[in-house]
Amino acid sequence: MMALAAARRTSPRGRRCIAHPQYALLVVGGVVGGRAAFGRRARTMAAVEPQSASAQGWEGLMSLISFWCLCPKVGMCRGGQDPLPGRMPVMATDQNIVPVRATHPIPVVLGAGAVIGVLGGMIGLGGAEFRLPLLISLFGFAALGAVILNKAMSLVVVLVSLPARLAAVPVSALAAHWTIAVNLLAGSLLGAWVGATWAVRMRSSTLYRVLAALMVLMAAALLVTHVTTVGTLSLPLWAKVPSGVVAGFGIGVVAAIMGVAGGELLIPTIVLLFAVDIKTAGSLSLLVSLPTMLVAFARYSGDGSFAVLGANLRFTLLMAAGSIAGAVLGGLLVGVFSDLVLIPVLAVILLVSSVKLARHD
Image 1 (cartoon, rainbow, N blue to C red):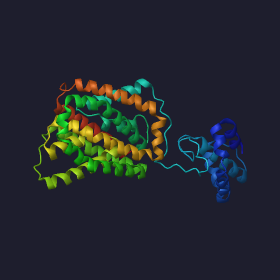
Image 2 (tube, one colour):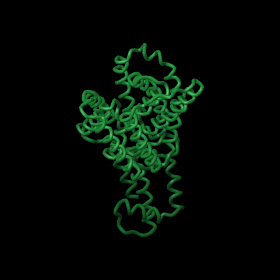
Image 3 (cartoon, rainbow, N blue to C red):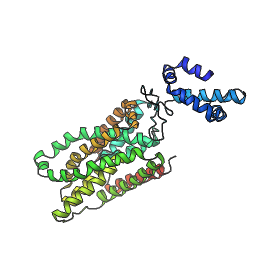
Image 4 (tube, helix red, strand yellow):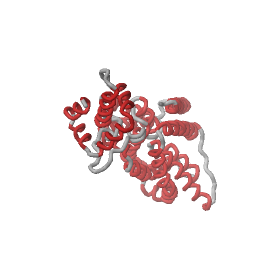
């Protein structure tokens, strides 16, 4: 009872959580289910004085309830939020746990974003493939939370870079290829919804391994598109259209699960299937990426894990700003390093990140 009283005295959130009538059901269930088990768990969370088995059970039960209500990472209050009135609180799983608000120093966040932006800018991309493992390994976000934040930052980068792309490639030139964008969007929009749905339903351990495999795919795409010459396929129209839909679907799935724009896959696909020059393909990829990302974003917004964005909005905007500035600098550094050196190094970075993600606990 001491832990319960302390929670009610020290935290308005604790008072509101425990005041909900549904917790009475938990109390009854806990008592009937075994007070001694709760006592053992309570002793692992806080040092309690040796007591009788009955007292340990009650003390452990009340400590566990107050722990669930007050802890921002686990428990029934989902990221430290109060349960909705009239609804039974839901036990958080490894996928819907909302991380604590990021408190990293501003220079660290901006600097990390800038480094990612430079790496992406030197190869004409936004760098989201490199940002994702950094969000997990350096900043400590869980897999799904990192994907959602990465998607938000990628969306900001695409919105900022789209006007520059439109200035570089005339709208009339893009209008002549509108059928290509429609063809790919026919598959990518559905793929984005399916990919985001899979991501929110996966166990965290499975998602880490899927992300690791996709990092290998990105490393391979990086090598193929920047070291070798991408040819074109002379397909008849009846084969080209369904191929575009299937390719768009696959790219939409990958982009949604990784939280990336998908340019690394879209650009070679456009060149390969539709025989478009690389510059125009880059602009078309943004036109396909933007609605595809919005669909995935809409799907993620319906899941409880989306709260990670609201809790870390300042962190997201700072890192996105650093990525944009870094991308501009990276664009100025194009040609400083030979692709024969730069691309293999970046591919190795992706492969090392893949190994770390696969081993992530």
